[in-house]
Length: 217
Image (cartoon, rainbow, N blue to C red):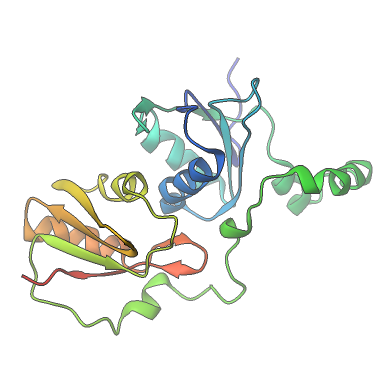
């Protein structure tokens, strides 16, 4: 029986050796390129290991993410993605279809839910992501990009997942001892430029908008 499309996608076959917090951050970095994420739920109980739910604000974003990332090698294991059997409580509440009785229950449950403060957009974040990055001084175009203003929890896997969707991606190079900067190499200057324009101002977390320039030669 087919599950009808909804805002929540269910992912399994995730590498269960990855810590829950890191998995949530990496899922956010990977899936937020398709649209605004309302919530990410990942649990490390025996029954729920290797599984996660991602809730999108828009149905089209959930559909697009499901199609584009089906089989994506996430921590070296291909993700299996489908729509969740029931739409998320978060979306149900927004629509007003969530019962009062359940709301009371939900209040009691709140402390056990994984922290999602990093997933919430700041109140004034309606401006386009590029707005804060227009003033970045740039170097002459070349095939290596320089990233800064990265959050402390950034790792090579998260950046690789973001950039390897672009043709010509070669590698990510982190700088030891400096969590907020990184280099990303492409095969050509043009390919680097496409990725730079697409991800300029991308928020890996709600507070850190990534700044991208060409690296100094």
